[in-house]
Image 1 (spheres, rainbow, N blue to C red):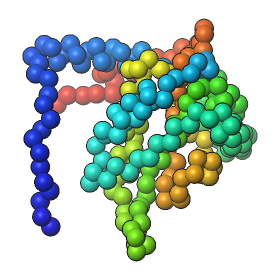
Image 2: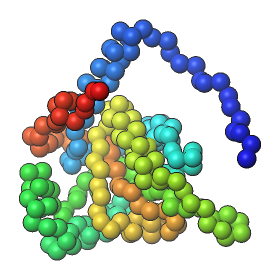
Image 3: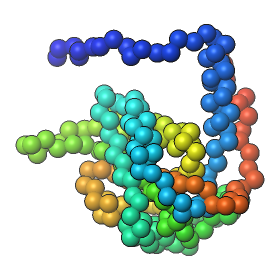
Image 4: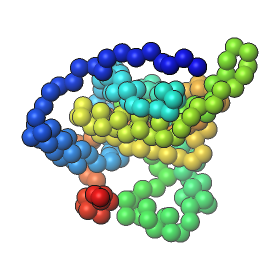
Length: 222
């Protein structure tokens, strides 16, 4: 197989080490203010803003550069409501039958339940899918490599981009999520990864009083 063509590395901003450290600290401090939000205002958010954040997500690295992510940004009120109805049906099953007592105890500190009004209220729901395989013109299947990892990285970039743009987010994962394929019209070779809720927080929004682990608890240097 011939080697892939190459191009020069795109030009980067030249910084001193002190400037790099300052940039890194500002970014870390900004993301430290990110919180998962469950109370949203219905204030509209321009589509262009969402497009730029999705462009940031699409810059993520992926296995064999196959870019297996697919994003469906939903602002249509009727479709959002269909998503809410289907998600709440799965959530009711989860809270009443599927979840173990230990799981419910872990969730209790967050105050969550099967009711998800934010799915109607938030201006945008972004359904995120990963491709398991593609099919060529002859009907042959071609595997996607590391789709979970690739889409996870892209989703992280998307959350950071939305936060940087001044929006709040919520990662919502009703299980199973097969209803998303039908509602937003995606083929069965695309698997739902998660539903990302985004918009402006509601006035006087409150979030659980929880703390993040300090750096020394989750990172080591050798």
